Image 1: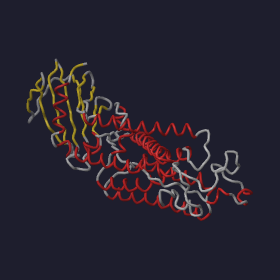
Image 2 (image 1 turned 120 degrees about the vertical axis):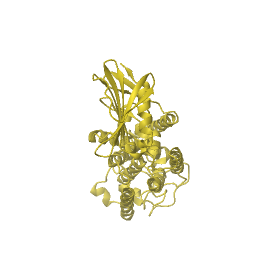
Image 3 (image 1 turned 180 degrees about the horizontal axis):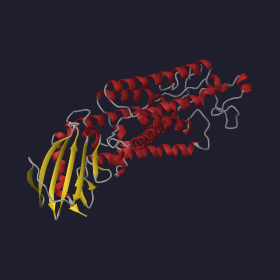
Image 4 (image 1 turned 90 degrees about the horizontal axis):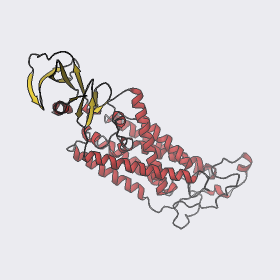
Length: 412
């Protein structure tokens, strides 16, 4: 399957591609919109019995695929930046989250850009290489068929719909730690567009070309199975909801997007506008993610009668609780209690801000570390709890978070 042959056999009986600047060129005269056997409508049995010039094959002009090269370059650049931010740990959850990975709690806290920016990040070298390979194989033929604008729009729409589906599933699962990254939502969208391309052109294909097209679709389906298997083998949890959302978007826009070898329909223009808007939306989301990565902003955690400034990796959820996603696995709570301050054995006093805090550390049965800060406030106390369930936050992150909460806590 080449860029000029998006379905693996389209041009098997057609002549050479016509010259010109248009991305796709038909080797036979296209049907008029009034033709009963026009390409988006299946032919009747009587029409199939008669030879039709449109069934001699379809050939697309191979004139370069700049979008495929550009996307690979961008994904590579972001992977390098992600690695550099994580001190060359390709799976560092702090770096992945900081650069815009999808976390539904953060989206509800205002990080709308994460619905698209997650697609520019990858969890490990194997994840990046597999997605880059799949993108190279699928984007070039789709770009040859739909043109650069259409192919990029389909990819962007699939990324956005995949992000929305991933977030909806995470909310349904009530998992505040779920973190998603990777270009596979957009890649599955390209596969969906390939399915739509075959559906729209099937009445113009000779039987052998149709069989070759089906073989190409099955080959790409097998490719996705291999990618999924390799990801699981490398310990990467697959976000199948993003894959489903992506492939649905690819099929939908693949059916609606204009193709040069087919007559334009009344929906062609609106579909093209939606694809362009999807591209600009995805680009703006990534721009917002970059700006936030360069200047992370603190978040505000509210408890019962108190509020405090939390570090950027702690995202407020509900009930005075903030969580950090994925491999960071940190939670924080702030409370105002009516009980007086009680000192435990092994606790130490610290002066933080304008209060004296008593710090204590304990372990849960699951091996989680709980760091507690308590300060006198009138007849009651202020209490900060930071739970750490990973080595990432045990390396000083939990202590830093508790100190920032203690410095900024105030009564409401």
